[in-house]
Image 1 (spheres, rainbow, N blue to C red):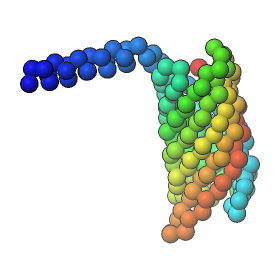
Image 2 (image 1 turned 120 degrees about the horizontal axis):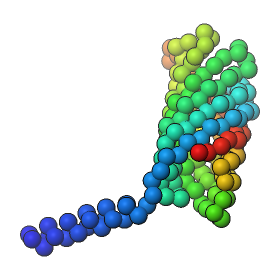
Image 3 (image 1 turned 180 degrees about the vertical axis):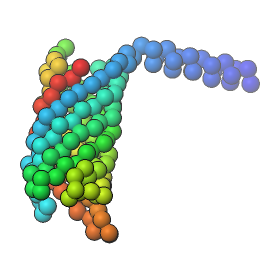
Image 4 (image 1 turned 30 degrees about the horizontal axis):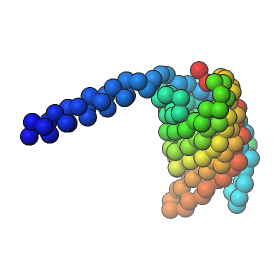
Amino acid sequence: MKKFLLLVAMATMSFGAANAQTPVKYHGEVDLGYSIGVGTFATGRVNLHTIQGIQVGKYFSTGIGLGLDYYHEGPELMIPIYLNLKGYLPVTEKISPYFSLDVGAGIGATTGMSGLSGATYTPAVGVKIDRFKVQIGYNAQCLSESGVSVTMGAIQIKAGVTF
């Protein structure tokens, strides 16, 4: 029993030491982009998003995103709130390609979309060069009301800064 407790204690301490070596720091982003509507319910929209979270080492970041999506038709405004996950593959000290995934919900903010909400997700690829970044992905905004569900898809292109 003593050997087992000693083994558990050593494993716990080594895990803590490994985590202490991985730097965790604040990570923020602001992006401006445009989503080109595709599919049956194709609707173009302008995007202004921010992500606030943490960078874990040089290979991973995560945070909470909040945005404004301005739909041309209507015009209407949607507020997406989502969890962002990014995996980086650093090529040099300043250049890092990445894969990003946003998963959350969009909430209608104008009269035409009042009461509407639904899931939103955006898988994307991009590259971060020093503090600037560009990405391209596919955004899907699902909306439902009274049992009727609609998914508005779009190819999303964004540029932004990290801090």
